[in-house]
Amino acid sequence: MPIITRNDCIKSGFFDTALADRLRSNGAALADLGARGGSKPYFEPFHSLLCFTGFDADPKGADASERDLRGQWQDYRIMPHALWSKEETVHLHITDNPVNCSIYQPSAYYRDRYAMKGFDVIKDETMQATTLDALSAKEERPFPEIMKVDTQGAELEIFKGGKQTLPAHTQVIISEVLFFEVYDQCPLFSDIEGYLRTLGFTFYGFIEFNYRSSKRLEKHRS
Image (cartoon, rainbow, N blue to C red; front, side, top):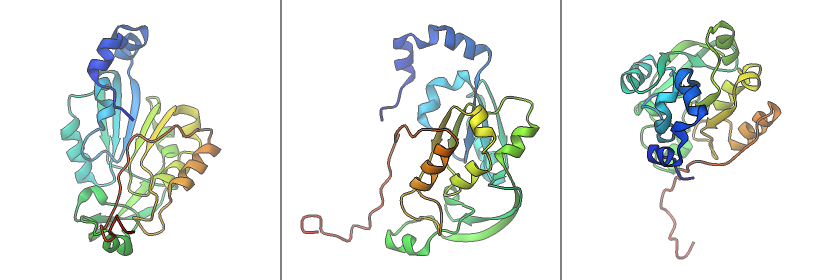
């Protein structure tokens, strides 16, 4: 799917519309669940119109995200929370590549099958998880209309923890989905898409794909 650039928005006249004026005075709320490494490029043209809330279960990742994002948004904050389907203690598996940290255990089978780097667990951290519904009940500002979720297999459990909040407040969900168990027993695309339909959401399409291959087959013969 082509990414809209800031020049595209300028040429189309979007920034001169009544909607853009309204957003400049009261930005739309965007939540980024799994905020390590900065925002996705498709948000870049609209930074000045968005109020950003980033979540990262790893406090070090949250701190890094805050440094990366400072000054880009109309308003921003980072919340170092582990999100889950219920409020309970969870174990975060810290991997040698921090972007792969997950509440789910990385799959040794698929790590070896696809020669995946950065999925070796170096330690576990215990932390208290909360839910989207619990956070929303405490919030003074409106819950985000736009939500981007990239939580290494935990997406479905997070959505289950927001079954009251998501239908009431959120208009758009951009979620990473998996088609094989990169993490042991993690939910796959069909699980996530089916559950979000029960909350009233409709699948729209894919923005980008990432493929895995161990290059063990001769393509001309297999």
